[in-house]
Length: 65
Image (cartoon, rainbow, N blue to C red; front, side, top):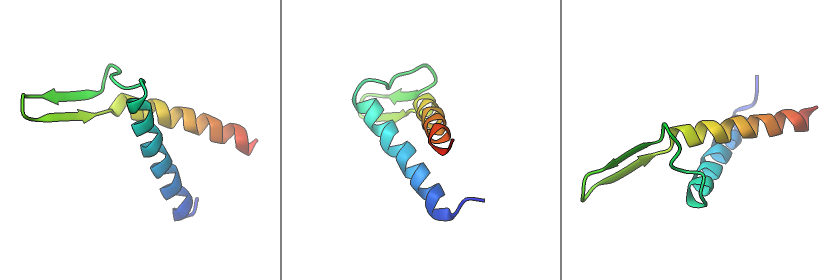
């Protein structure tokens, strides 16, 4: 079992990299939720979060080896 600090760090890293990837071009993948009704705009990058999480998991797996 991992310590809570490591889990919080991993979750925050996923959120940070997801925000950065959306800002710099990885966003708008199929599966991302976008609601735009004139005065209201909501964007939930579900697929982008999954892609970033898988990539981070692979990188951390490589570093642990």
